[in-house]
Length: 311
Length: 311
Image 1 (tube, helix red, strand yellow):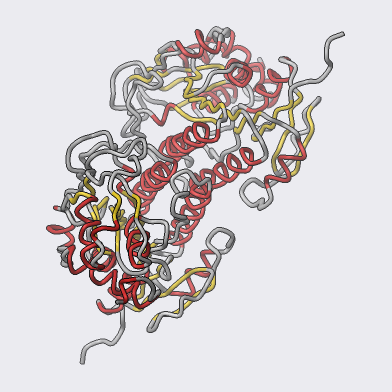
Image 2 (cartoon, one colour):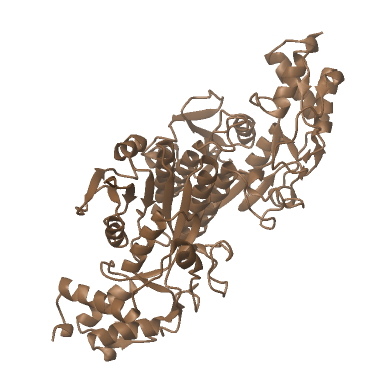
């Protein structure tokens, strides 16, 4: 007879854009997920624990209630257009440190935190590789993430926890908040309006959010420690990405390339080395750009059926 | 008629070892010092504001009450022998970020925070120079300080505050807590007992705490931003320092050099470049080692008059 006991994991940010597919992937891997946060996201097969991470003063007791020995910490404030410089980044570093400390003292054994490609030096030209490429964040958000990882790594080393740091690259997919490139492009085109954008010659590493969620779950389950890029490993011109969007909506004429200029500090290429994700975690992104965009357009059509996309 | 208005400064950690001489130096420079903390250190010519920095949730209101536009943040937990790896370092990063954010939102214009020589890469062999020497802390304490400065620097840049970061080197002087090299050596020798120590061949940059306090006050008053080493710029063998102690107590025979081994990770030399302190802040340490040790021994004699030092 095999044991019916599921591994218990504590997760924050489970109701968010990345959190939602991550919970599904964890449940599929056999985890019992304890969701901690302010609002109950009402996710099937999970247990909710009401905690305001920015305010709670007795986190340790709340953590001990869950019995979890692994923590996946996704919660953060990432208001589109604002999060790069938002002082709330400081509050999330503070809240995350309190959470990591309380989890350690509650007997936790594994912590996976969420970093960002924004931790790397964007003026360096090569493929971003964990433990090799220089860390030199240009923004408060990037510095908050890099500083937090530096401390989490030290906590792990001296307290004997297995800690990992998932550096997310560029995401797209169902559930993306408005105010981001792909969500705004799809909604504008579905409404039959012109979408003003840059020349789109800059290349980025985009990963579908379902792949990102599955990668995070795989990372949690693996024994891998240290930073791990969560990305496709593919460098795609924004122009090509948006062309896929226009094609899926049959609205090639509605994208106004070059009517906006690239923001200062935006490099021509940002792409990840995903050797660690593929070879050590054992996860390879599955979703093609064509399929990923098609699913995302479909999700928005079902959510907000407007414009000529309905024809 | 000249104005009688004094510049108002908010200070944390004012009752501590470094804080005490720093307050005196600020008052001497004409500042009105608002002391914020849990316990009133009862310092003449200052105003006390009761705040537990690790717990307070409405810091902004407390800060606005003071009317201060400059902040000198010294408070931290530095229990001798424990602070390098103490998880409370995480709490102090969190508390400091909340303080910096609240001070920024309350209209603050200048922040001086306290860093450490522990932020530098101790395996690098040359004189530690701000903005040049590599930052690579080997301890949780060093990482906490380095991570906090990275965020304070970003806050300053984007919010328009003049922020500086005082990297303290090795301190000695009156008021030093027990459990540190000089305080323990003096007390052991004053008690007429043998002081067991390392070979003492390692060289360190020691600065008298009165000089450190005066340097901090000068840094606050200056327009200098960025990291500034607070040190003597002199490399002294620990053996030489302790010989000064033994001489002041006339107890040369009581130091047992070589009976303890140097801790792992302790380099043979740590010394600061103090060009920024001297040329930009305009402060040069004044106290000679002979005078500094004599004053420290005198302070301990008056505090705990025991042993053959009394003969």
